[in-house]
Amino acid sequence: MRIAVYNEKGGAGKTTVAVMLSVLLGVPLRDLDPLATATQWLGRRQPLHSLARHDGLDWVADCPPGIEPSILPTLAAADAIVIPVRASFCDLVNLQATVRFVKSNSPARAAFVGCDIDAGEDEAMLREALAAYELPVLGMLCHRASYRRAGLSGRLASEIDASAADEAAALVEALRKLVA
Ligand SMILES: Nc1ncnc2c1ncn2[C@@H]1O[C@H](COP(=O)(O)OP(=O)(O)O)[C@@H](O)[C@H]1O
Ligand SMILES: [Mg+2]
Image (cartoon, rainbow, N blue to C red):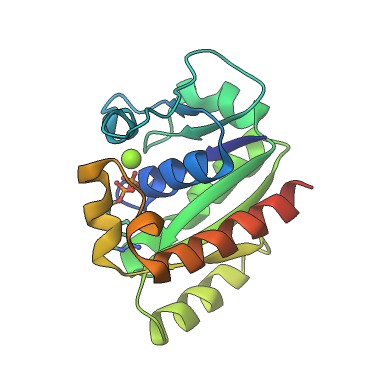
């Protein structure tokens, strides 16, 4: 399975989602971001999780923000593109550019995952805003301190927080269905 996690916007939740999917799917992570946050996160993990240095059969790619030509081969080779998105004006106002870039550079299915979501109004507002794109919404990762903290110990939020574990499991199941 080849999954690219991308949003043009920084701070959307890409690295958080990419690290989680890579570990839970048991496939290597390809860190395309020069900041190498995912690499540092997984470097704290025991036992170490594998990083893919070359194009392998299976990977989860953590893409950098922006419209970077360097990610085009990754988008083109992916089985699915996961677009993390927050429920805020600043994130939604530029989402159209990300979706257009993904659709014009990849034949893969694209889908959203809501990130850092306050239960209730946030989710309803986000689902309404995303409906215009006619792409599936794989799930919602709620606003939880565990998502911010987990990387310090190289773990996933789902490994230290039962509520995060439930939403992570639902996300993985929805993603498996999307690429089946
Ligand atoms: N569900 C969440 N709850 C709380 N904080 C979150 C959540 N998801 C992401 N974050 C935090 O938001 C910030 C940006 O997330 P990150 O994954 O680095 O985004 P990106 O890779 O798109 O720049 C980080 O500080 C991360 O810990
Ligand atoms: Mg990142």
